[in-house]
Amino acid sequence: MEQVKTVAGAITRRYEVMVQTAAALGLRQGEAFGLAVDDIDLAAGVVHVRRQVKMLKDRQMLFAPPKGGKSRDVPLPESLALRLSDHQVAFQPVEITLPWRAPEGPLHSAEPIFTTRLHSLINRTEFNRFVWKPTLIKAGIPTTRENGFHMLRHHFASVLLERGVSIKAVADFLGHADPGFTLRTYTHLMPSSEERMRQVIEDIWAPSGNAAPKS
Image 1 (cartoon, rainbow, N blue to C red):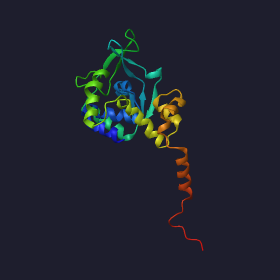
Image 2 (image 1 turned 135 degrees about the vertical axis):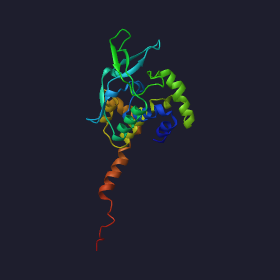
Image 3 (image 1 turned 120 degrees about the horizontal axis):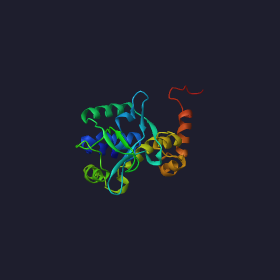
Image 4 (image 1 turned 120 degrees about the vertical axis):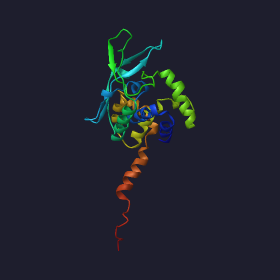
């Protein structure tokens, strides 16, 4: 948690809320880049994750469905909704049109919430090199593979599992088709069954401070 907060505080203001959003919703990097205004459903209190920005080998970018081709809904915390609203006031979204799925695919338009200072889509390679890595250095965090943007998604999963959210729900929020994959990936982050058992029984059977002593 401290690392994620440190990175969010060290990164340029334009991308601060993007870091918070990816960490709070478990977004992949391309999904964060592709998150658009109409994906935020305030009435339902959810975020529709239904688009990512993909970069091809020739560095051409296009819009595509999330990994696995399946969209998903993630609950929207109220505090994040307020941050996203403030961000859109400070950095006005603009409509961007790209091919859908493939270079020859139909055109697809969206208003990405997070863009560059030139109001263009974020280029993954340039972002990682000129924004993310310098931010890690500034925050005193090693620029190793495990500390890439994906660390925000791992943070999301670990926090939910540590707080007792079911593995099935976490898998749904992450967009994993198989909860078993989620379990295999994050099982080391889950509190042990033994410790949970002790805490449950302790909560029920621990002596009350106000209990009268038996004669």
